[in-house]
Image 1 (cartoon, rainbow, N blue to C red):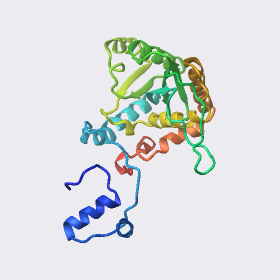
Image 2 (image 1 turned 90 degrees about the horizontal axis):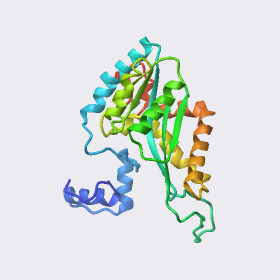
Image 3 (image 1 turned 135 degrees about the vertical axis):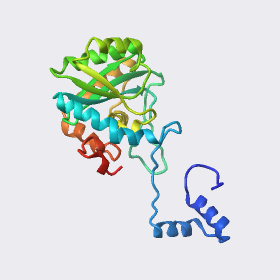
Length: 259
């Protein structure tokens, strides 16, 4: 519309009204009209500009139903997996304090991080691995080995298109375990389709409440404690699949899902 910025504010909406109708409103006045028109002030979802708009539709209508049908025919297990990084200087969270006096939380000034891979199923199962190094083919093969060790049937593992997932070493490992596990790839730049992204958000939301780590080892311990806790709470794991953009996983007829 020729306006600066990417977010609709009352000021932006008022400027557009002025350009179109040559009428000026105060921001509260603009807000009243927006509400009358059925609009609400919301936190927007983020989408990568690189995302192919057609890819999510094809995933919903073709790729995902085919994966689910194959897993069902093979009496297999479907898991969604993702990687997450946790840093010592992540957001602290919120706490109560006296009005006008900003509370202070004492944390180490050193910077360190750990990474984790997790995988979840609609049955409420969760599997994870915490590691210090960056995600590469070697780490991915180690994670896959852990996954197949937990099942006596074939696993269909759905992941994003990270280079480690598609590496030559991982493909070679999979070729030697094709009766145990198979990888399926989500569309590029489409994290909203992966329920395990909600696990990552839960971890980063929960960790500040207990985060006292002063070194990488302690941070890894706290991260494992979170995952162990969720493993004992299958109802929460199942709840990740109730997210607005991932309900399709539970829908037997994806064409009728509310996307």
